[in-house]
Length: 419
Image 1 (cartoon, helix red, strand yellow):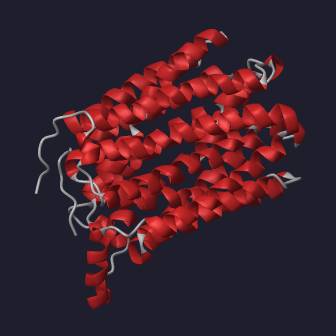
Image 2: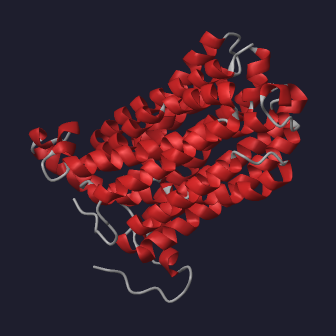
Image 3: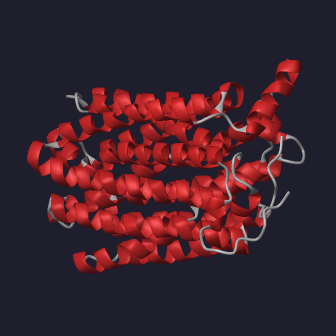
């Protein structure tokens, strides 16, 4: 039954159940800590390049293999979440990425660092599919975009906390202790296990499959005649989005920090940190705003506007070299160049039914991640040969390609989620 029309700004929150709020808190904190751990690499990348003697191409390869590992982790944990539970999968994924983030601080060679980044990536990929399915199944259609927007906005907070941590610890103790702080999320799993129950929709679906084990869904169910083209289009769209996002965000801290002789702006660790933190402010508002806009105006319209605007701002950012102008433009680029991710969880949760929801969300997000894994290497190589302006321009073109994919993706606003 639809909820009564909210009469106050925060009625949508007060009308939810306690289970829904706990699920949102767990998924939001998991996503925040996911961002905190995975983005530490980008924030210490300039130091790693100098300390371990890496080229930009090698640094980009490390970023790419982390994304590939995250993609396989997402596919794996999508299946785990559908078969064993959303909260259980969430706990396991957080433990994996916390432990191996800390392990990166013990790496003394590029090979050791690569191994730890691969294992970290498996946990990072698993968190999104588990957490997004958990939130989608506990919030009603009227407010699903807002709830997922709040969850997605925690990525910006986690990224900002990582930038703050790097800004404080990196000049003081170097890059190794920065990674050690990444172990903190492991403590968060205690909260999940004690306070977050499984969604009713998943419990109901589990009972059905227990009575009929042959009804357990897998990847083949994502390509039935009525789903195959939508699955392909939403996966390709996300691949372009992730290419643009990682190609830009993995290299922005290095662009700001590297000396001019290496193609950067030569900012201090503190100045780089403050610039990145300012961008996270814009990113946070983008996540939150997109959720409200998508619930009111529709997912498709908002996605297209955000992506086209992000492409234009990306081209502009790549050709500015004044730190103050980049500090001002950065939050606007982050607003449009990231906020749309709020809509992806809403759209995919509304496309796929409960029995294949986490599997479908994990497939669409993480297959796109596999395709986008070339971004850190491609952008790094482009920056090495032609400069960061041309490299960021490639990311802008990916945003435009993502907008074009919406020709084949239906509007899903208002769809109810049921078993």
